[in-house]
Image (cartoon, rainbow, N blue to C red; front, top):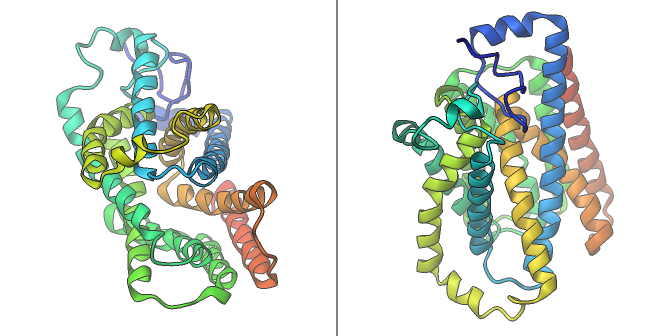
Length: 347
């Protein structure tokens, strides 16, 4: 019996993103269905930005307010919690890992994901590990304003990687909006353009690994036969052991055990919310990248920075006012808004 189109969520209690097949494309040609699909894409983008802003605030509270010594351990705990959530949701028949497959049908399989499919997602796991390790190292060599400035140029690297991997081309309107974002980023950080060759190199390498990771999500998501939850499961199962070994080698586990706030109720609550938000953030990244594109995910990341700076200023303070910084932030906001507008009108 043929399956319903994967863009229908009747088989699942939580929304998933499946690679479109021929039946889906015919379904999307209808005006009402296309409008519904566009609404899902907007919700996916908003969900990502909301989770990302909240996660940054909780991570900052854990690392700064409670002086937690290791970001790697927090990342490992978040990954373990995500795998546990996925296992429980799958066992309770709330979600499925296979694209277009109902939870009843997938219960007949011996395992969650076939070994062949797990091997197919290895490039995604490798891209994630490289992205994570380089990104954590990139904050050491440059100051925070310049780090934020250089990281926003990720959008250019994403466009280049998508072009090299899948031949993706963009309209002049999209290229203009991306250029405005990058220009705004450099205006915002113009007063902190202190040159550090090693620090700059690491940040630009981080931009490249981020672009590769997002493009890999988009590519593997369309060829693996997995939905967003399946991609998350394979990523966690594959990367978890490597990340655990990494934390042992670096001595992060020992530092964590000796942390003075490890058993503090406030820290435990912050860490718990951090792990929960990380699960929803990873899900929204896969959902947004698959429903929209790797470039759209990067644009949402730039737009998210504006809200992160605003809420961080209100909650944590310590951000001095600078006219050109505000101008640069507004230019970046305008570029992100133009990109969203051009996508909505199909330009």
